[in-house]
Length: 355
Image (cartoon, rainbow, N blue to C red; front, side, top):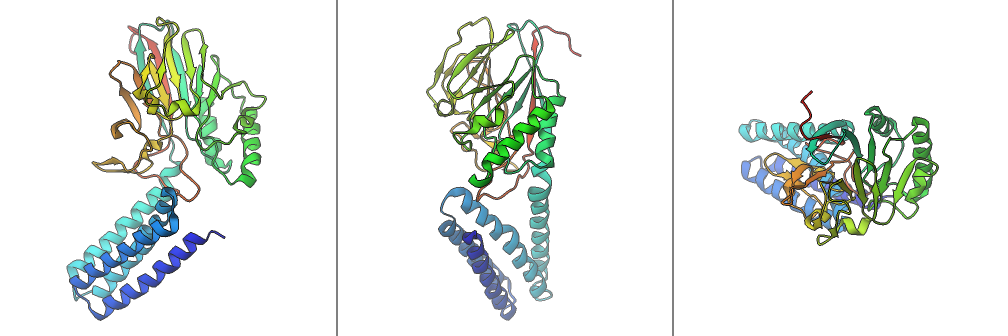
């Protein structure tokens, strides 16, 4: 039994009843404001006390906002009625906004996959190279959406596939079965790429994460390693080094196009002698607000670099994927203004004619 959500919703349900009872006795704007403030304080404090860690707090707070907030606004609209017509209308409008956001965030965006295409050019390249980046798959089951994501990777006909970690996030009792299911499906799809498939570890991946790629043409890199792949050189970082802000990575062959792959993007703050840095981990914030951008990035990089392509002072490009999954466990299962994505990078020799 998952007790914190049950206790939280029971407590907030009682608070809802008290607030609406008080509002039914004093149907004024002042009472409406006081009731909203009191309910908000109880919702936040209860989430912090019962949740403990930040993702669980966010999960409980989501119940407070979308379930109990909508209920209170709807009840206020009914109770205030003619007594405070403007406030009643605002309450009804607020309820509709919350419900609309909830439908988008919980039911639409989490599986509304976007394929983002990026084109980069360099004089170091002698031929085009198509790369597909899959980050933060973060599956707890192998459902229709997860299968679609994996199919799309191969449908892009990539020359190189980069897997940026966080492959699963499931309860321990189903984790091993899930890895085997994903492995079997990847074999069924015929996972492969001309220049190779490379996987690094993410922070949700347990010690046995390489089992997912057993008997597949995937190079699992648990420690920092560098590979010469013909037209490009690839350096795969271990999990710890991807978080190091003072990391130094030289390029063994400066004349060769150099790609660095790490789970977290924080390493981009270091001295990285590369042309392209690739990472995931941030989920693009997972929740983005108009004008403000990502609410949380879990990265030390500037918020504007939490997803997409950014040019670093060195001239190198940093690509941070929004990922295809979302935070699980006690966290709210939502995305808002931050669709999941596969990233397709088209590397082209400089001077190639536009298509």
